[in-house]
Structures are given as structure tokens and as C-alpha cells.
Length: 271
Ligand SMILES: Nc1ncnc2c1ncn2[C@@H]1O[C@H](COP(=O)(O)OP(=O)(O)OP(=O)(O)O)[C@@H](O)[C@H]1O
Image 1: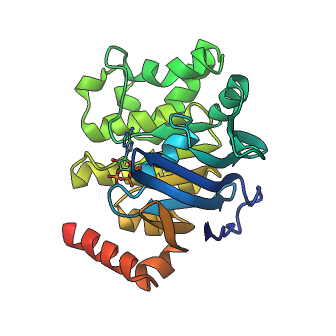
Image 2: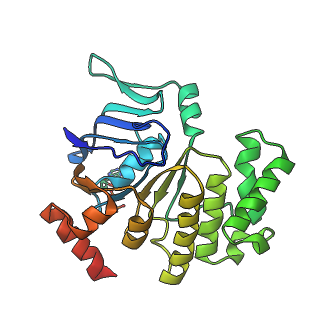
């Protein structure tokens, strides 16, 4: 079993093991993607997942979104189970109603912004709060305007996504995610498709989000400076296991594992 300690940030008043993965395994055919993986994340903690391509980082985020089911093990968010291994070793998925409840607390921003192309920016942000959270149109619009101001796009509320740069579209996607008032924000390589300048704008917005809220963040990224600024903890994945987990200063300045050193060097060489 691979156990990564969970450092709870001083600022967090919340649960130390808000998100728990216990003995999670997942394989696709012969490809073992997650190998008996256990870790926990405290409420309000910001955790960055790093590691080579194919090491299982996105798989973890997708399981939290219930887009993907583990083969075995238990995943818990707060007091709610997403997947639960029973005594007989069988995997029990939580009920649909239960999953909906947990899903309502988690949102994810993807590498591709996935905005609705036929809707203006404002409606992109209000659509789910109105139809999923049941907010009134006025209330949703008021909040959407605040969020669009926060991401620096007040002047784009009436634009269509195709009229925006990639960085602007990604900032709309962040506003849209936050409009769902999540407890947990999952970020999957959100700047990988962007030029450095546009990526920097998006990362600045995320720095502000991290500073101004107590949202729990799990972030897959190659943007190491951002990870250093924002994270409480960095977890290094290799072949479906966490081989090292530590605060960013420690892992970036004096990684213990040779594999981590090599990976960080390769990221530096790329940039
Ligand atoms: N639906 C699927 N069917 C088959 N194999 C899959 C599927 N989804 C993921 N995989 C495989 O699982 C492994 C882990 O993928 P995952 O996307 O979690 O890695 P990652 O660490 O996020 O990598 P990257 O940085 O490239 O996104 C990869 O080998 C991938 O090819």
C-alpha cells in the first residue's frame, strides 16, 4: 500500500481527511494505472499532482468526478462514499442520489474549455446554477457577473466563446466552475493548451481563487512555479503510485527520490 501523509494547512479548520482514497486500484486491460493507492486530502488543502504522462493523475480526478470507476478500494468525500469496498471484496458504488449529492460539491476544469459555443459568456456561467442548483435567473446572473469580474472578463459577458482567446475561454470555464459553489475544485492541465502569456493570465486568476477562498483544490499541472506558489503539498506519481509527497519547497528544492529529480529536470528542460 502506498501511503502519503496528509499535511493539514494551518488555515484549514476543516476535516483532515476530507477526501480519502483507500487501496484504490484501476487497470485497463493489462495496463495497471493505479496500484493499491491510498492518500487523503484535508479540507481547504491545495494539492498538486505531478508525474510523467500516463502515471494516473487524470484517472484520480476522473474518479472523483465519478466519470470512472475503480476496480477495487474505497473513495470517500466528507462522510459520503463514492465507491465502497465491501467485506466480500466486491465494489459497491454509492446510490445515484448519493453520487449526485457528492458530485454537487465537486467541479472540474479541463484542458479544453468545453464552453457551450452557442451561448454567450454570461449564460455559459449561469446555465448550471439555474438548471442544476435551482437558482433564480437574477441571482445566478448577479453571481456570474461578480465571478466574471474576478476573472477579468466583465467586458465579455455578451460575447460568444468563439470571440474570445483561449485564455479568456479558460477563465470563463473557471468562473463557470466556481458558480457551482463547489467545496472541491479539480484542475486538469488547465493551461496546457495555452501560449505562455495566456497561461500566465489563467494561473493568476487561480492564484486569486486560492488566496480568496477556502476551496479544496486538486491540480494536475506542469506549471511548477504555480504549484510552488499555491500548493500545500505536492504528490509525485509514478506508475500509479505516489512515490513522494511533501510541501512544494521540499519536493522542488530537495526531492528525495531519484525518479522525482529526473522528472523535475525533464520539466525544466521542456520549459
Ligand atoms: N478509458 C481508457 N481506456 C484505456 N486506457 C486508459 C483510459 N483512460 C486512461 N487510460 C490509460 O491510463 C493511463 C493513465 O492515464 P492518465 O490520464 O490518468 O495519466 P496522467 O498521469 O494524467 O497522464 P497525462 O499527464 O498524459 O494526462 C495511461 O496509460 C492511459 O493511456
